[in-house]
Image (cartoon, rainbow, N blue to C red; front, side, top):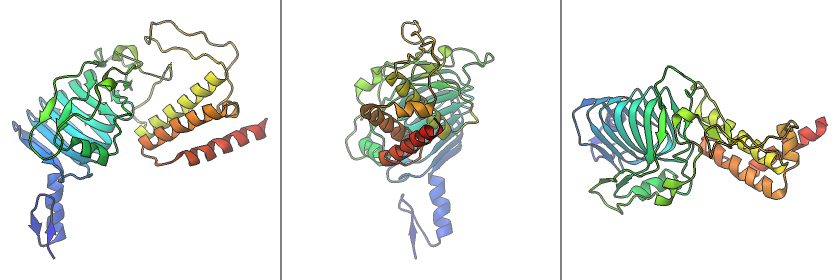
Length: 327
């Protein structure tokens, strides 16, 4: 039996095939190289690792699973379409063009990220990160987005959460959101349409924070996290907070504005303490329930917990019944 890897090489044993294929899913311990490229169908939804790289240009022009980027200096990296998380750690003086479902950085300095991201990006122990709209294109990029289930209609690249916003030891700014799109990183060659699939309109979508020195906001309230929390836990917290915000709005409870957001004027807060999450669910009208269900389902799927609105409705119904039973 012959085993063939996506680059066309053949092997007599599966062990040899696997060893070679895994070597295609990484760039490690390299320097001063500017032609490090993986095109479809090499990666084809598999995870990818980039580690210990200096002064290189790397392009992963295919749909991928989780991507881990560690210990990279003075380099440019293009991640075409990741259906999961992209982790950027211990990197400095680098430029990234990334399309992904989730983005997290840690221990990074002086990095620039041209970003498309389904869920809110997260930074920690990071300083002088400049976040721009996605600027990449290569032949077949629209197919990569589709294969990675990245909908260009859902782009929260500018809603950055800072795990270390209260860490005085880190130089400011931790991050800056810059809504101007950088010059296009267009990779020639290959087959298929070569056009950035992300609409320009999403570049200027209204966000909560412009500068990492001001903190992170969601639903009008400042939210703090720890890097010990997983992205899934963060998404669950955000989903719960949005549901509570919508329920409070339905009851006429004004929510405080995040510090540094908007014109800086805080909205008045009702003197009466807001009701518990369970009782809030019971007062939602049909339209509000629909909005809440859609938001929670979207957050759950973005966090890697496949679900649908039927399941969410069932959970909300049980929560409402349980709350009613305690009153």
